[in-house]
Length: 104
Image (cartoon, rainbow, N blue to C red; front, side, top):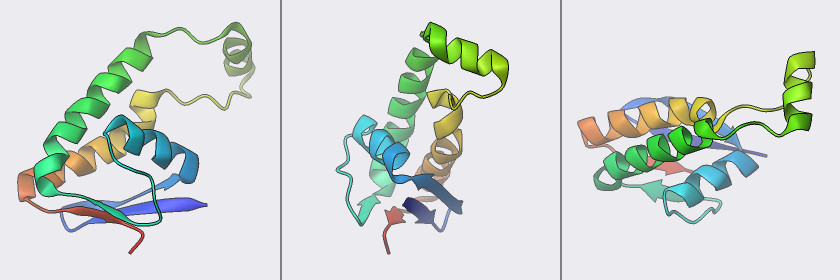
């Protein structure tokens, strides 16, 4: 299944449930069928995700994942790449004072 995040400040961002759950946990939100990230929370959430993405980017791939990546069959997308559209959405929502919703 997929979760679509919406806000009046930016275009929609859709993620698979597993990825959405990971992202929401990183910013301290519960994963559920519906929810909200308020405009007041959005700036801090963007900063948390940028930090988590930078930390994850410093880690090396496991040897088996590195071999898959080199063979072109990797299903490995770095966290900072995966969350970039969502971080952009969070920043826009914070700047324009708009909430982010999902499951509505």
